[in-house]
Length: 181
Image (cartoon, rainbow, N blue to C red; front, side, top):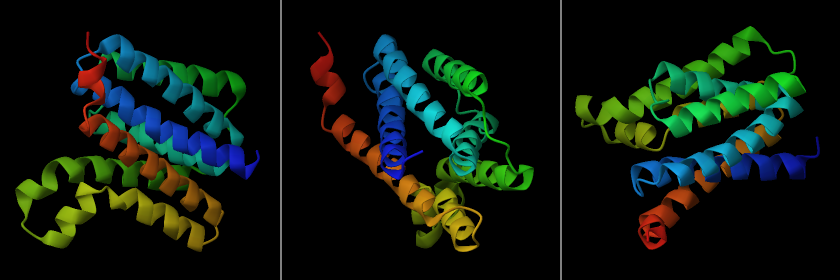
């Protein structure tokens, strides 16, 4: 798949993922959360079927979040089911189990560390590292440096993260309060 299209898919995935969470958690609007979740599932699935690297990243995020018990709402379950169905119907590339497990572990580490580390230590580096979920960023960067992923997948993942933060900023500035009738 074209790198421009992959960049757009990664960006939209991060953007819709955060809007789905915030529509539910901040706006208490489950139908809107489901709509954003459906969009996230579609763009994430299309990225997943496009390459082994994207598949490892998105499946790693999915399973890492499942293991961290972060799939905790109807919008998450609908998103998960749609992502899995599209990915299976369209065909997931053959994956390296070792690389997939590395991605799963880094996503799980990010989620668990994000929730727990500030309660366990006052270490500013560790708090910053897990507050901004750097485990998967570092992992993807190292996999790219080692030649497992093309370095563009690190760039794509940074776009995903940038879009996630941008959506959070939009949400923090009252998006879901303005939508309520």
